[in-house]
Image (cartoon, rainbow, N blue to C red):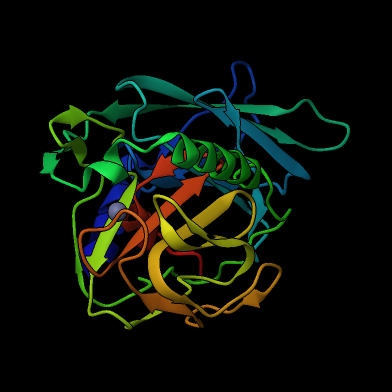
Length: 290
Ligand SMILES: [Zn+2]
């Protein structure tokens, strides 16, 4: 309910009319779920137009946005803000194309605010913090494999309705700046959900399994492609119930909670990348795709 009201308020606050200069016939507008967004957020960008564009193209933060046609002939996309993006004002620039007509240009300012991620201090076994040369070689191999997978996605969206949490349990805040054994490390790029060892982990939305394995840092891990560049990651599992190439439905069990890899106890790490931007999974849960 909270998320719904917020989205609704956001809709009214951020709905506005923009048309290209000199284009008196333009009748299109952009609506956003939020016009001021924090680092790590993902927002839905809707276009309402009194004509039916053939295609829509657009960019945000120097990345192309994929547009999806809705059942009523309008288009929407998703704009992600990587957790380490610089706060400030950015422009969403869209073009609505129709055959035989000049494209209609739409512009929209989006303010990105500092998320003020909290600091977390952890103490871990030295072997997990300062890996030896064999471990470093393994980490490099695993990182190269992951980096390739993050750029390979299905050409259409598999999601419908709303995403659901992969696990019931207490969810930590996203984005902790981590100090591990007194040294500054990469920020925490997902949310940790605590639950007893063996609790089932389910797919937040339909998707294709693009990678599974037992990795140095992330332990037994599942990577799900929800389509169009939305990659979900599920780390530290005790068990993996799917294989690369499987297609899973929303709610299907993909594994179980564990503490494999660099983990201090049983929990699930849920991370989401949207076209390689590291986004807060909670922000994704607030969006509706009905
Ligand atoms: Zn985590």
